[in-house]
Length: 126
Ligand code: THU
Image 1 (cartoon, rainbow, N blue to C red):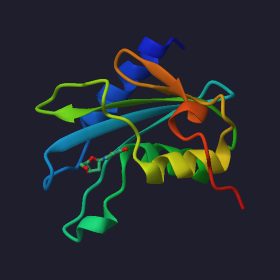
Image 2 (cartoon, rainbow, N blue to C red):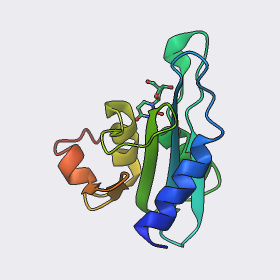
Image 3 (tube, rainbow, N blue to C red):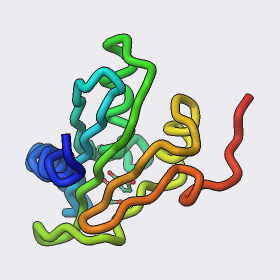
Image 4 (cartoon, protein in one colour):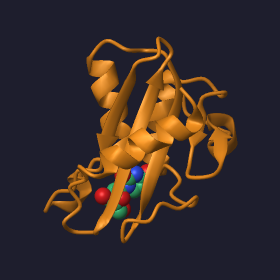
């Protein structure tokens, strides 16, 4: 699975985004160490703080299916159907990643990729 292929799956997942309040659709595609991919989209709520980001949707889907080891996540987000390199995962999603992933876990955007270490160098671990 190339970065581009994973990103394309994230773009496809963004098509299911439920973003009636922000109009900002996001899709994510999570690559498990066994090669399986789980996708997710953002799911907004009229009670705004209950919104779930695309990344956490994908991670929670995977974890609830028994997956615990992950290699990379692609994130596709943007207003008006465009996907830009500045749709970084939010702090809450980075914290959820840090529960399951090591520092070399890769975060793939439209044309760039980062490690978890780069985007969240100091992470809370219980
Ligand atoms: N959003 C994500 O899905 N992932 C992020 O990492 C940042 C933000 C969503 C939440 C909300 O539905 C919309 O983008 C605008 O904030």
